[in-house]
Structures are given as structure tokens and as C-alpha cells.
Length: 435
Image (cartoon, rainbow, N blue to C red; front, side, top):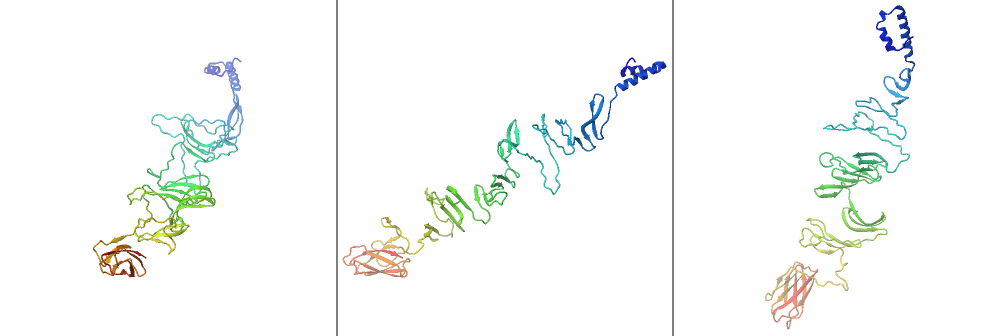
């Protein structure tokens, strides 16, 4: 037999009709030889995708296709490396199970030019469920890893911009902006947790809760108006504390500005507990209604407001009444000055009657003077400060030869000065009214 080459035999077969009968039989044998020497044979399993198991043999591959899902030994496309070309799609769940110490998904070669703006990853879907879905979920079993390991790391040019550590720490290379529309927070809230408290920043409010978790935030700092900061929470009394020392809740020194030490009373001062010491309080400054720099104004600037009280040893000693009177809080209990620490001068309002004016006068002041005319023995002073209980101290202020002393008899709204003898000339008498 000359040849079993199929191409040569096909060329000879082109003129099969012109061959002799003997030559035709020889050609048939040669064609049978060619077919038998190049045949592909084998068998397989239904739904198994075939593969060449030898040069001329076909058998089962690891891939199966049941018309719905393509699997590899029971695992969906569980291959060492899967290259997805442009336009490829996953029309059902795709599970990637990489071998140890290898990446599950690597996307490379992404590049945009011109005015293109395609996303490197574009995920979209629809939620129409009563369940609680999670759009993107990352769950790492941390058997062992470096403490600095990251759940996510978003970079630009190889430089980290936003990352989330395995401990849940969120790190940003720049500012974090949360906008609810426009250029403010709007109705959006930013919550920052440290494991104990959650700080909430929302529309004009900064809040800290009393307990762990998403509890109602009872401590709130508000923006009341332009350049105006407020601590408020409905009708709940608030307290502001500035500590000098703090060991624990039972040992401290602090300044207070609150409505909680005494209900419905604003308390300003220094307090202490345990090993702490009550420290001095110094008030300095200038009130806007006082022109002198450094003046300190105590009391209310609102008409009809309450009196101003002065306390020591946790008790009220003096108070300034609504009418402006400085009054001790208890009768016959408190002094002005002390032995060895007397008051230098006491300035009282007075009217001094000019020389040449004699006789009865109206002087509605605590101190003053009147002039007895020659031969006069008494004189009436009308004074609205005087009551029948008033004590009036009167002294002769002129060296008259006969009139040396006077007595004062108090009545309601006046008092009478009586001389020991008639004056020989105009004589001055000074008086002080004490109530």
C-alpha cells in the first residue's frame, strides 16, 4: 500500500472515475487505512464537558454543565486562575475559593483616557424585602494576624486615604464631611463610638449618651444662634463642671455652674469631695453697663428680678434687697468690722443747714444739722426716716455760753430738739438718726 496520507488520497480520488477497476479497489483500501489511523475515539458521562485525554482520545473533564450551572468537581468555577475578558458576565452566584496564600479576586489593567469615567467596580441591585440585607459584607476569621491588619484600605497613587482596621478603627487622611444637603450637616448624623459612649453630631447639636450603645443622648450642646453655644435638653436641669483635680467620683475638686446643686437655683462656685479641698473663687471682669475697666457687677440686670444674697459657711448672711438696701439675713446677728479691724469711715447722706437759717427744718436724711435762733429753747425737724422707735443722737456744735446740751424726742415722721437753756446767740446742733 503506497500511502495512507489523506490529502494525497483525496487528490487521487478526484479522478476516481478514470481509474481502472483494480486501481479503484486499491484506492478504497488506502482510504480505509487513512481513516483508521486518524480516528478520535472515547466515551464520557452525561453533562460532563469532554477533554482530550490523549492525542486521539476524549474523556471526562472536571467541568460539568447541566444546562443551568457550570461546576468544577461540585464547586462553582473553582479554578486556580480565572481570566474574565471584556463583556463577560456572571448570571448567577459566583463563588471564589482560592488556594491558600493567594488572592481571590485581582483586577488589573483598569485605565481611563479622554473623557471616560467608568467605574472599576459598579454594583447595583434592588431591595424589595422584609428581611435585613447587607449589600457588601466582609467577614474575616482572624485566627492570627498583625495588629495593624486592615479590613479595607482605599488608596490614591499607593497612598492610603481611608482605612478600617480589624479593630474597627476608621482612619481618614483628610476631613470627614457628612452633608444632609447644602453646606451643613442638615439632618444627617455622624456617630463616633469608643466602646463606651457614642458621640452624635447632628443638626446644630453635639450629643453624648449616658450609657453604652445607641442610648438616648442626655447631654447635648446646641447652637442656639450665631456665635451662641447652649447646653440644654428640654426641661431637664443642666450642670457644667470644670475640675481642678479628679481621682474618682468620690475624690475631686471642681468648679460648678449648674441648676442641679439646688433645684431652680443657679449655683456658681467651687466644691470638693473626699480628699479634695474647696478652693477660692475669684470673680473679675467688667460689666457692659459700667464704664470703668475691671469693675465686677453682682446681681441681676433684669427689672423685678430677685435679691442678691451673700453667703458664708453654707448660710446666707447678708442680702441686697430689690429696693437696693443692704440687709443682714438675721436681726442682731452680724457685724460690720471687728475688734482690731474697724471700719475707717462711714459715709451717710446729710444736709447741713447754712448759717443764718434758723428754726424748724425738713431734712429727710440720716444725718444733718439745724440752727437754734437766739433765745430759742426747742426746734422741730421733719424727717421721713424717723419713727417713734428711732434713736436720735444730737450734739451742740456751737460754744454757746448757756445752751450746752439738747435732748431729742422722736415722733412718727419728725423729732423735737429741746435745749437745756435758751441760746444766747445762733447755735448749731448736729443729729444722727438710727433705726
